[in-house]
Length: 232
Image 1 (tube, one colour):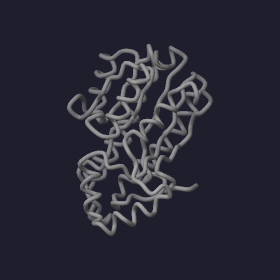
Image 2 (cartoon, rainbow, N blue to C red):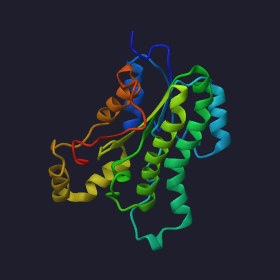
Image 3 (cartoon, rainbow, N blue to C red):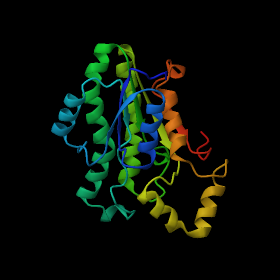
Image 4 (cartoon, rainbow, N blue to C red):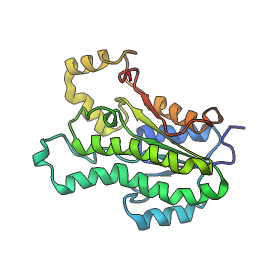
């Protein structure tokens, strides 16, 4: 029997890569896992989020993993449109806000809950692709994590955050990896003390820790899982 047996988890952004690995890992730990991606619900739309949570009922574990660069590439800020900016902020930050808001009433009633937000190394430093909205939204997720930990702690709810390094986990990151060329790929790996790229399972392991009893007195924290690239 796994530690999460009897618990219900919702993981967003599970179409591939990190989200899939997180959902698989929580299932291995015994949770009943609901997987949500863009084909399931638009998590930037309040009515759709409300409908989703009404259908699911109780959620003990929420992992806000949905996001990404929504097909955008880096360009100078004076060429970024209002729509470009809002699309990325909504995908990464608004979705986390809406899902958290929908999940916490049941968690408060239960006197327990676990929320993990998946930010990015870009939120602690800069975006490797130069996408301003992405770096800003991921930094905002970190601020949102800390504020929610402060607000929800008295209800027995922990809120933590993971900031992954570069993981080849989806078509976007594969395209990014290829764009670096052989020399750029070599420099990227040499900038990581452990001298390898991350795997989706590395990020999933961090989530599994945060929602386990081993992390029962940990909240409001940001864990960089990046092979030591961010040493602070």
